[in-house]
Image 1: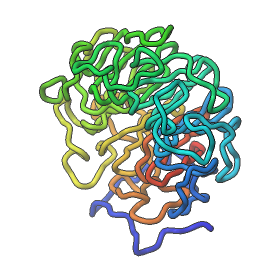
Image 2: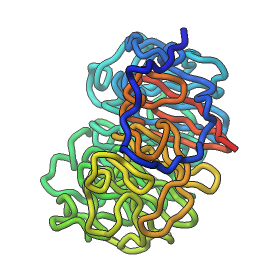
Image 3: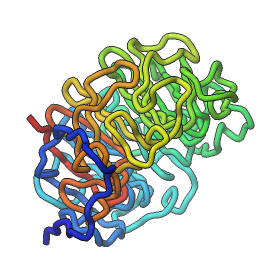
Amino acid sequence: MRVSLSPSFAPIKAPGSVTQGRPLLEPAGARVILGSDGGALVASISPEPHRMFGPRGVCLHPDGSLWVSDTGHHRVLGWKRVPEADDTPADILLGQPEFGREGRNARGPVAGNTLNVPTGICAFRGGLAVADAWNHRVLIWRELPTGPEHAADIVLGQADMGGGLANRGRDAPRADTMHWPYGVSAIGERLVVCDSGNRRVLVFDDVRESGQGADLVLGQRGFDCRDENAGGPVGDFTMRWPHMAVGWRGGLAVADAGNNRVMLWHEMPRENGAAADALFGQTDMAGCDANLGAYYPTSQAVNMPYALAVLGRRLVVGDTANSRILGLDDNAMAAHADRLNGQPDFAAKGDNGWGVARRDTVCWPYGLSARGSTLAVADSGNNRILIWGAAP
């Protein structure tokens, strides 16, 4: 049964004239919804093949498959082809011995085929990379995994597949350790990891073997610091809670959610602690307030942006705490978004527009993946994945 927005749940927005945003995605909403009875707000979150609990990562793989980090169930779900019907059950399971099971590391020891709060997920060199956040590592399969017994081939952040301690049990980080890596992305041959608990982004130029160190660090001056904003005030190179990174227009974009901004490098950084060239979400490099210090958002302001993707020429921003999706066509400082979905205008906010879940609303979007004219959204607060076509 489809549900519609009740008049008693009108979206909250700022008074006065409001700039209307053209839709980034089809205004009718997602063409396919996975995990939530086609959009119903109340649904079981038991670990079934077609159910999810707070999914935070999604990957539209180049081979036509779909992969989801079903975070709350500590597992990854795979579909051999992108589904064309609502609530299609997954074909492949990782992290648990069977679909009806859940629990951190399958209620056993850390291993090459277990997961503990998986989040970011991406295609990498024909295979798959998963940010296994609470095991403080990234798992890499050289080929697409086939089932629960298919262990990862490479682990980063730990010395071996049995390690699961933050920074390998040390007080200070190193180039080969991680603490809550929530985001992982492939940019060409590079693997980029948002090492969120260490307040930094790690860049691996050439992933070869388990336990190797990163080649570059952003957000800190060196590999041995993990302080928020590098131990000082927010600035042009510092980070508080980096969550996702993507390549955009030959450069790099990082969702620095804790500082309520997206950091933009116009070329791929080459030095540790390189300063960003521009920001989206703040008007200067020292700003960090949610919605630029106001209650209502605008086309220029964000509140904890966790997710990024590139759809066509635009950078797509999951403006998570404002429960909306923005499209950005300008990489200059303090630019304005020009496309919008999830809210009726740029000044509106609220989970599902302060109403019930529909095909065109979101509640805390944590993950994005784009391929061709399709955007997949990990709509975490609604326990579902949206497969959504681009608007003209």
